Length: 522
Image (cartoon, rainbow, N blue to C red; front, side, top):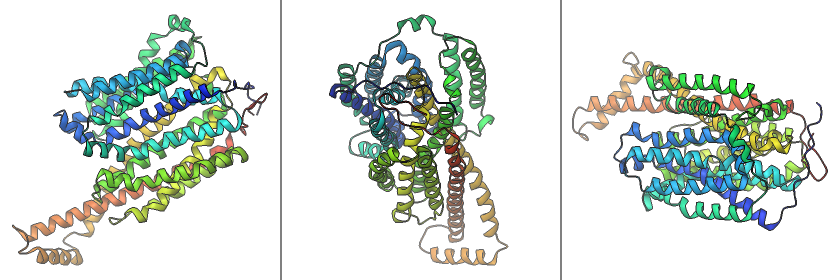
């Protein structure tokens, strides 16, 4: 493989720039956390706005659609406005609309405010990734990558716990009010301390508005289909079908405009770099693992074990503790080992962790799940840090801003596709297992009839009404529960297989070497 373009040494970082960058990381944490804490308390938001259960999902969906449209645009806007102006405007806008969300009195107002909040806040995440590669080199870059990886993975882990606590102790309004002092401090600090590049206002005259509209339709429609498709039986629902058509049409127009214009809205040439392309595929897999596991295990704990949000958060926090524990070790290993070996090992460790989790029963609790959840946290950190370096570490500085948006887009799309696949697979496998278990407890089975009789005898006189009917209902509930547990285990096995298949891709990339003064990336 021919050597990648040399990366010049980043400027010397003073205390001022370091403080500004740390404020950016904190802003990124706030933006990711906001999705999780609202998701954990969506029922309370629904009740506060007097909305229906189906309507309340738009509080999250509108945010995710707007955010995913902004992420690939962040590179263009960063060059147009400068990193300092874009991030400050993003943090300030996110803060203002957090306040408006907290004061919303109707569902339509909340949906509009959440969409604008997601769009403005979406620029914070990719901008942090790009800035870390522009500012830092060598061991410092690894340390910052560990920090960013820990931030990006910890937010989904602690989000449900924090959201549940805020709602129970205060009210759902505080899910948004908590952002205001943090967002204001982040915006002020970044504006004051970080000034690393100059804007190119000439880009405004050359912006491709057709491509922008097509991009919004493509990604917005795709996000809606992934979010709502499993719930409404995919294309059987007219709204999902229309959004799928909008996404397809938008995608065709967007790629045509992007590939034929000399100054495209989103530069796709970064995919010509093999390391970046494979890194993006790996990031897609990380998104499935990160968001899929954080979604599936709480779903099991809530629906099967009957845990509340606080109990679920306490169980899932093992993953966060493991991430904290291994992050300094991962940082040191990344400076000494071949990053491809670490990347492969991380995915294999994630596969092992998910496979060990795939032994769920209706009695599984903290102690049965602690080891697999801890291993998953360690594996996620071990995979994410090398993936960041592989994807972005060999690109020239002028491509980093745009590439960072594409890279983060792949992780978000991985999460969206992963959740849709998890919901669909869990639903299909649950139907299958329910049918199989139903046959096993039919009237033709003497053992099943005896079990129903024993339950009816035990209930006779203890409950009002027909004991035989109550016994049948209890058996049906047991069948439903066991089918659900078996379906979740099937999904976990499928996720483990995915990570095993992705792991060898690490050796398809050129060996990355950290950039340093006077050095390059090979």
